[in-house]
Image (tube, rainbow, N blue to C red; front, side, top):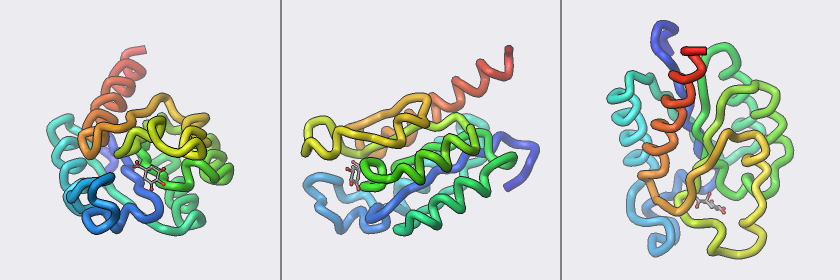
Length: 153
Ligand code: DQA
């Protein structure tokens, strides 16, 4: 990542590497590579440098969040099922203190009760659910808006 451009980290958690194959009726046919390319393009049009990271492992996700301290200006994260279970991921986000937008492809509030709880939301500025891959674009726009307002203060 270069340091003269605003850098944003887009993180995808477990099973999101299987997008395209995974329950396509629910998650659609776009692959993770499609979504990452969309994020990089959306970032470019906003003047942001987007780096994407995916892991199925909670520890690797935490390591990547910690490594973003002092490097990235914000985080867009779809933590997959760890959203609903991981105090450790929430703590990692709180500890780096970067503005964070939570994304879910599906409308988790229309699904099982256990998906209605999000530890990530306790560390996030806000979230976008149920809008598919467009949610990531909206998340980057929201982060850009937030960062430009904070820079004016
Ligand atoms: C998800 C929703 C989670 O409940 C689920 O475990 C996922 C994907 C979504 O993008 O809709 O893996 O985060």
